[in-house]
Structures are given as C-alpha cells and as structure tokens.
Image 1 (tube, rainbow, N blue to C red):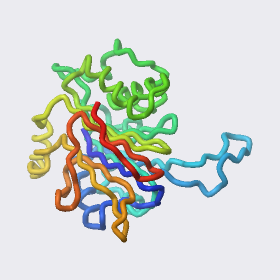
Image 2 (tube, rainbow, N blue to C red):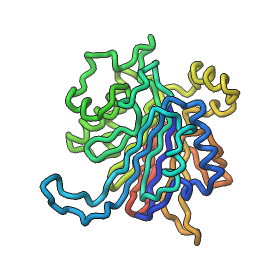
Image 3 (cartoon, rainbow, N blue to C red):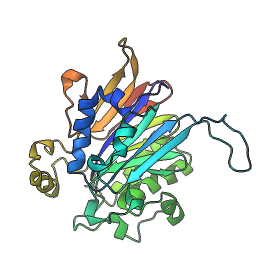
Image 4 (cartoon, one colour):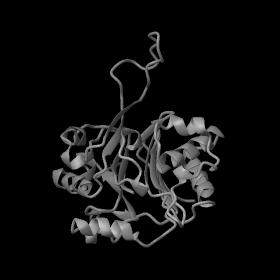
Length: 290
C-alpha cells in the first residue's frame, strides 16, 4: 500500500520539481514518506550520452535509457531524494512504499520494478477476504519465469508478471494492464489495482479499486502520525496537465492523493476503473475505461 506519482512530457526533459511547480509541493509530496516509510524508488527516462544502437561487444546501446533508484530507507531521510527531484527526464515514476500484508522490507520488493524495458509501481494489497496474500497462493496461474523476471517477491510483482504475460501475448500496454486486472479480479475482486507502468513511449496509470472505503489498517497507521485527514481519499488518483512557461501543454502528471491537489490548481480526479494513457514523446494523453 503505497503512494505513486508519474509523469510524461512532450519529449521535453522536466524534473519532479518542474512538473509539481516548485520546492514546496515537492516537500509536501516527500512528506508522505513519513507514513509510507518502508522504502522508496524512482525510474526516469533518459537519453544516453553515447550514440544509440552502437555495438561494442555487448548489447547495442539504447535509444532511451532508464535510470532506476531504489532504497529501503524512507525518502524523507534519504539525501539522494533531493538530487533526483531536480534531475530532468521526459517521463518518470515515483513510489513510496507501505509494505502490504507485512511482506518483508527487502530491496527486491522496492518499486518501481523494471523488466523488459518497463517500469512498474502499484498501490494495493492483493489478498482474499481472510487476509491471505496472493504471494501465498501457489496455485495462481502465473508463469514462474516471468514472475522471477520482475525481480520482486511481492503481490505487486505477481501483478506486474501478469501484465508482462499479456504483453507477451501481443496486447498493447494499456490493454495488457486492463486484461491483467480482469484476470486478477476473478480471484481477488476486492483488491486495489491502482498502478503505473512506463515504457520508452508511454505512461499508463490505472485507478481500479474493488473497495471504495479506506481500509481500517490505513486509518490506524495514518492516525498514529496525526495524519487522518490525508487518508480520507486514500484510493483516489488525480491528474493535471503540465504547462510550459508560455502556458502551452507539455504533458501530464498523475498522482495518488496525500499532498495538495486542488481543483483550482488544475487537478482532476480520475474515475474508478479508468486509466490515463499518455505519450512521453508528444505529451498527449487520453482517458480510457477498463
């Protein structure tokens, strides 16, 4: 159970500070890791310095690279956060972790996960009505080699693996996410599948929660920090256009709730079972239902 943020620009390098509009909003966003303190990570798209497709004995140099950073230290106490918050990229994912179902605090379970050129982050606990996490369900039909390719050992890694399977079947990124949720909901209908996935070309953000109420555990955790007011809209995701200095549209930023996202500042709530599908080449985006 985590906090997520992702953005895609019109092929323009922009930092987290740029897309959120200044240092104070970045501080408000980072403050959520006081509660979501089981580690954090970020995956950003960059243009490598060396020419693309160059062969030097290993894999050809890529046209787009992914800078990946993950830590079991909370973002609030990690000095690397300040450096990465001002590092420009044409797209990025940010993730603050609150471990679901007491899964272990190990680096393998930190997100974003990265496999097959895709970065993935999830906010949810995929468990049944008895609290048994999907990771304990050894009969769930997911290809073990695909699961291992995610590098994770959590319910989120299973979710990512199911998406990867549908991509392997030939589905486009947005439909692969939708198909994965449909499959998982057959066994875990009440779970949350809020997630973000990023390729070299696209950002897909889905809000899909089987429950509308905030879990009692979340309310208890937030209450322990005196942050109850931040948990009321816990499952909500909002999006806002990224605007350039001259007011032209430069992309979209999408985020979980928990820091100021006022409608007057351009934030719009994403409906449940809806997704943002954005290009990190043109900055254009659309809203789809699953």
